[in-house]
Image 1 (cartoon, rainbow, N blue to C red):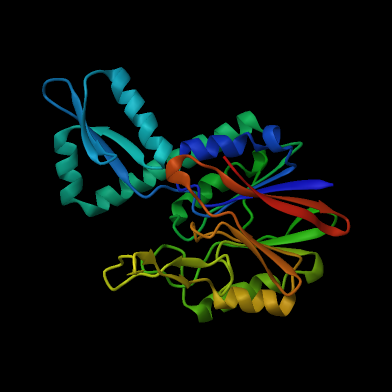
Image 2 (cartoon, rainbow, N blue to C red; image 1 turned 135 degrees about the vertical axis):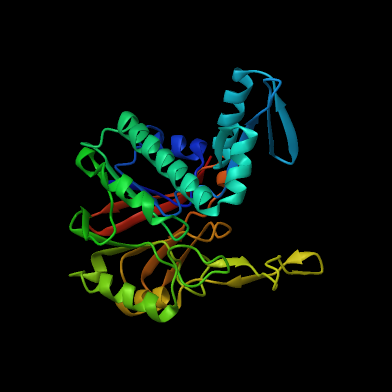
Length: 317
């Protein structure tokens, strides 16, 4: 029996990453897969004032920090939620406001530094000679982080994009980071027609689809995995009688591939609210969802044998 622990959408949260690194110890997992949307969404300036104190705005309030210890504690709190703390002077903030390119470069530098620290942490906590560790970017992630992950391949971290990976028992896994269009114009999204081409290019690499695992960040359309709040033209959630309205937002190309090819297993993410499992014909499809801002790790444990998927279940904590 081989045990997989699959999680997605950590979005920069140090707390969630640390929990994921402890999964082999807690759950006895042999294979760790963290698949998609690794990076955070915002920089939080911690601004040094003339009187030696620091100020920042986060968690719905303004903070005044009176010592280096308090600054360090605030940095850790910010990292917990997935954001990037940035200690700076007032003039640095003004310069970034005037120079969007400089702000973009700072954001990328902070993302890359966080990913690098995470890779080091995994190698410290997990014996990559005994455990399989797979780390994949998703649609929200800038391409600049890929080379950081790749630089750790000789130390046991697997970057799965563009590859067919034999996980165990001759089960082959293919991976895809792209999703169908979103309202946020993320780095790795494309039209359904282009997504279908990308999916086709991957699935054609598989020898036996009955033994295949599709590690596609985008969930299949019209399943329990792709239900997200419906948004109006101003990108605000739509409510009817006080209840949020949900709609299917997954990839039709993903759905088509899984219907036609019937892989053994589909591993998906992207839609945080859809912590769910479903089936498409004989194909089991899973989405662990995400609650990264609360420091909660959500995942699926999947036990594989030579016969296929023996069992799977949700875990969180």
